[in-house]
Length: 328
Image 1: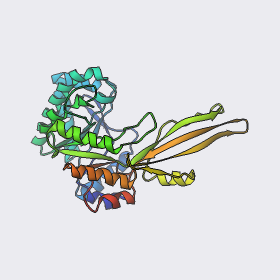
Image 2: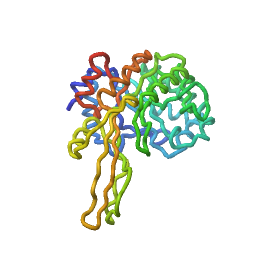
Image 3: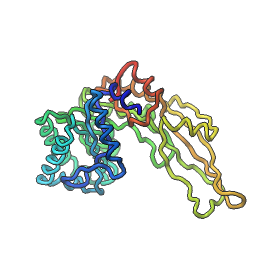
Image 4: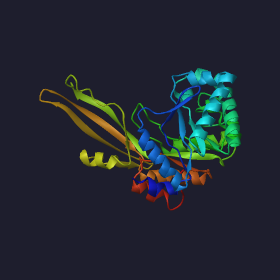
């Protein structure tokens, strides 16, 4: 319902429900409502924002790397992406191919890296021929090297930079499996500095801003009744966190070092002798935290910011960012 009001403030909007499921297959996510997706696209096009859908690598580990390693299948995939962009009359494409980083294994990076660069070069030229843009959403690097401490150098930020219009830096998800901050400020600064160093210039870089958090189970006392398995890691966002705070009578505290809020609460499962108590920890970035990170992007003279994700935000987020800039 906020889409008509907010989309006009954006330079680009990237619908996040398209999956690459084969060398020549790009499909809407099976969990997406196709009718609602088309309705949103109609609203987005009327807003004046460029519609640049994200394509996610939804194949098993190693599958996309294998496609890109073969010149023939690589070219087929380029043509599939270009045809998808043309069929949808999109302004550009955003690639969100994360399996290289998080599923394939670091020992594959040296082999995958040049194939990825060749693919991006070919796709960028192909889309420009159609007067469309190419964006990539990729993890950060800490420096311009390829060491164990360099970050996700498999994406070769410097080599692909001449062939893309924008690189969105995924400067979040610092803590996933274990409790902790989402995007602590020192980590964000290292990601900015390292990616600028790798690319050689800030002019094509866009900083990803998290408008979300997570809650983790941190301890359990007692024996939980059979069939009442407790929740694992659960995502929250700026639209849901206030209700959680009120429902659990929690008291959030702000950490100036990380630029984030956190709180804990207990959940009782079962009753009588058959019960357990689970302690949970919540960390999240609020509207002021979004603004802090946006200010870091501005200080580094990056090309803009990208909010992850539209729908996670609330009015406070927009009040924090709109006076000085528009969201990606």
